[in-house]
Each structure stands twice: as structure tokens, then as C-alpha cells.
Length: 400
Image (cartoon, rainbow, N blue to C red):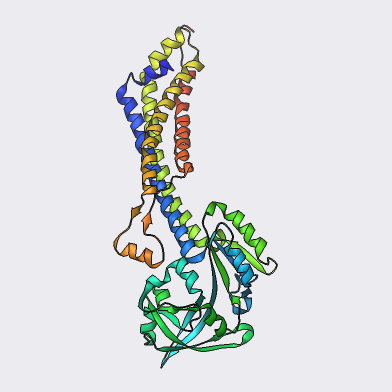
């Protein structure tokens, strides 16, 4: 190793170029992947906690055919047992259906969502989206509608909407509901076509007391998700109900995340290919410059395998020096921005808050991100080593 270290610094410029190329490639790729992973993890966690839930419970057949006849029944005792599970932070029962909303000569098909106002306030911060009127109570018979829907139907606070839809087992769902509040919902689709009402009002509307379209469950620690699902399945009637993980219910979001990650992985590997060719070029130049040296060392008795081992060790030491230096800088940066995330401002921050999400962009400190960089550099170094080892094994020494 003493000989290896001396050989590396015999040509300082070459050593510094090799170490620097590895350093900047690892630093850039590690921070890029850390940032991207952190942002996606935060976005998914925000979405799960504020909207869809980490776990969803539905009646068998509902996921394939979302009709009222496939709604479920859950008693208050089971609901209380679910809320008592250690890792569960929120259980939000929902009644989701469709209806024709009418006011005067205007009508429009809308989504009707029955919520528990108290639980929904904790889950998605729905009250902060109010731009007029008041929030619902648990026994309220009124509606919260989007601004776009209010403008389309020409209704305001205190006006009454007539809703006509389908009830349980083919019954007609008909009712008159006063508008209690106007919401500013971020997406046009939601703002123009959604109305919230209390669970009690929604169940009465579809003539299904104690009926729900499903339960949305948020957990505190996603790493304990499988154990929590097992506890939920032990509480609910699994013969009539299905318990779904967010990996199933949020499959499209996961696919989007994987697509985005794949794009960045391509950029990362392009970067490493460039670095790899740089290292290979340095190795070829070094091997040709030291050809006479290698011949002399073999002539005086050094075994070829030992000489090849020294050259390989030189490249590995330079590569690992660059990796260690890069990670020594990247890890503190990632940890800092993990604890002090970048805070978004302006319209983007407001949009996040409207969705009930924190407008933060943290870095991830997942050890796998940084270990991956070490593995890639080691693979590149091992491939580059093939050239000098092959040359050393084929050197022809005069007199032998």
C-alpha cells in the first residue's frame, strides 16, 4: 500500500483529475437522487395523510364497481377499535356517490361526498378552503360546494340545491340542501363538480343508515404499514370487506414517481458513463506511460499478478477517495435539508396548502441512495482495471 500511495502521487495532476471527476459525479448524482426521492416521499406522504389514506377499507366488489349497492356497513364499536390502534392517526368514513344538482333552470351532474366534518378537518384541513359561509357540523343538512359549481348553477350561501340520484337497492335519492359554504378547490374538476355534506345527511339521502362507501385510514409510521393492515384485518369482517394498502390504491401515483425516477436514473448513468470513459482514458495514458517501468519491475523479479494488483489498487484508492470525499460533503447537505426542507412560496405554496399538504421540499437520507453511488463507482473502476491488467499480462520482456 505504501508503493500504491507513492505511485498515485507521482503524477499529482493525473491523480487530482481522476479523483475530482469521481468526486463531482458522485456529489451531483447523490444530491440529485436524494432531492428527487425526498420530494416524492413527501408528496406521497402528504397525499396519503390528507386525501386517500395509507389504508382503505371497502366492501368486496366495490373497487371494481363503485355503486351504492356495493357500499359497506361498519358498526361504531369496530370504528372505535380502529381508532384505538396504536399506529392509526385518523379514520375517515366516507359516502361517495353522484347526483344531478339543480337550481332554477340550471343543472349539472356532480360528485357528492359525505364526510365526518370533525375527522375531515383533522385529515385534509377542509375548513381552510372556505372562502365564504361556514363549515359543516356533524348533523348538518347543508352543503359545501366549489366556487366554480356555485357560479355555474348561480347559487350562493343560503340558496338551496335540489339533488336527484340513486339510493340504496334502486331507491330514488332526492333531497333539498341549503348551501352552507363556498370552497376554493384547487383543481377545476373538483371546483366545478363537487359538493360535501355531512355523513348523516349523505346516509339519509341515499337511504342507507350506517352505510359507507369506504374508510380512509392514515397511519403515523408507514414502515409499520403491513403490521397495521394485519391489525385492521383482525378488527373488520374480512369475509365481507377488503383492506387495501396505498400501494394498490395509489398505483398511478407510484407509476408517475417511478417514471420520474427512471428519467433521473438515465441522467445519472449518462453522467457515470462520461466519468467512466474519463477514468478509462486516464488509465490507458497511465499504462502506456509506465510501460517501461512495468517491464523493468517484471525483469527484476516482480510477479505479474502482484504488479497488476498494485495498479488495480491505485485506481481503487483514487476512486474511493473521490467517493468518500463526495459523500462526506453530500451526506451533511442532505441531512440538513432533510431537517430544514426547502419551503415553497407564492402560488405553488398556496396550492399545496389548499390540498392540505405542507409546501416543503425535503431531501431524503435513505442510506440506499448513497450506497448505490459507491457500488456504481466500484463497478466502473473494476471495468477500467481490465485494461492495465490485460496489458501487464501480455508484456514481452527481452531475454525471457
